[in-house]
Amino acid sequence: MPQPPTPRDHAPINFWHPHIGDTPITTIPHLHHILNTEYPGLKRNPQYPQLIREAELHLTFIQLLKGKTHLERGDRKRLGNELGISRQKFTAWAQDARKPRLYYELDRILSKTQANKIITQLHKENNGVTSTNDILARLATYYPTPELTASKHHHKRLTHCTQYFHALTLLTDGGTNLDIARTLNIHHSQIMRWLNGSRPDYLELTRRIPQQPPEPDHQWLPLTMEGNFHPTTFIHVPTTVETWAEVQQVIQQTHPLDTPQMEHWHKQFEPITQDEAFAYLLGIIVSDCGKSSISRTAHRIDLRLSKSYTWSRQVGVATCYYLGKIGILAKQVGDRDSFTGLNTCYSWNSENTPLLTWIDQTCLGLRRNQRTTYDPIKADWLIKAPIKIRIKFIQGLNDGDGWASTKDQALGNACEPNIALVKELLRSLGIISIDDGKRIKIKRQRSVLRAVKLPYFLHANERQKTAEKLAKMIQARRETNPEFIPQNVINEVQRLDAHGLSKGIIAEQVFDKFGISYDRRRIHYILKKYPKGK
Image (cartoon, rainbow, N blue to C red; front, top):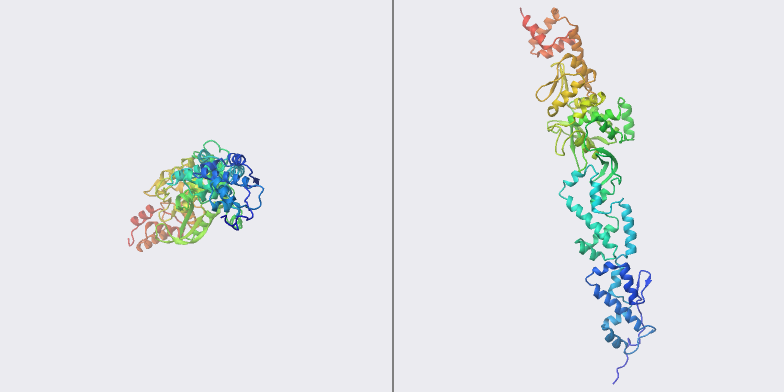
């Protein structure tokens, strides 16, 4: 007996009409043509045979029901058997407007045309870096590269770049993110991040490095950094320094800071050129500056000067001004303990910049883990630098570690790791010094007078006053008749000796009181020849 019709037997047909993007799909050859031309990478999907078979059946299904608006009795069973589809799928296609899984996959991927448009823009933004070989070529022109390659993450970062470029190539074949990710052994979300503008670290770095090569034996150096991979404002620097001219070429590429604070300092301090400011900075870096870093490719100056000295603030502020002359921002921070932990210090910090790393490693010849406190610099080029440069270097060195003593009647510097270089620099200025253990000492009268005239100290004002007093004592000694010793001087020498004062202090106090100058040997002679009470 015939079965009565069910509500679905005469139900209205509600197809999903196949289309890819804005293009309607009407035939199976048309579908294959679009997939082969715009989505060839989809074939990497392990489910592709099932996906394409289902899409073909769907097109055939539509053709078989073409022209009908309602299902007729028997269509469900007849077409289901003919096409080999289940009742559930028949209902989904014929009445619920469901689409085959292939089209869901296509909704989630880019066509070759779309991918090429996006990737062309990405390559444009990547400044000519289109492969891992391009990255290696750019890194070869980049001064901080040795610090990067020394990192344990170096090879991993290169691998990320290789995966990135491979992903872009695969995307131009119209594959799914999931399939591409599976091929590259990465998470599929990474591909979407790359398409949205995220980049591997080394690509982010190298796309910023100038595309044109630097001069021979030079590399690109960024003046500012955000972390390790966002350099800006490039200059070219020599990889080794043998002459002052090479250093000067670098200084000329920097620009003084344009700030109200710099304007104030400009009025506060005596005029100084960029070259001279740089030379002073070299001296203060060698003598008193520590260094710290938040990245491998840049570091900052950490200057701490004892609160016990009246001139410490002046030296610290001058250092900030001179750093500003070459474009490096520096400022005073909170008081801190000295590096030895023995006293409290005023403290100044500069910004982190690769320029300070270049100064440290190339100008001064220090390795990354070396410190000027313990390791000698390699800067013989200073000896043949212009005289003003040598003087400013010596002044920076002395403002940090220099000393002047009317008691010892000498000048000097506690420059233990660099005694030989400092002696040679002083000799080039006509100043003879001696090696006094961990320091150099200037004792010869003519050399002391020449040193004071430089001046020996630039911003350590009280020390310079002591040095100038020493120079006056030397000049007075030259005018004093050593054979004639006034009785009032003899009496004063005896009185001071009775109070237990050293011969050096006695000589200074005699000068202060009488304007007559003797060295310690002459004081000893007076005490021996004219003993008190005889």
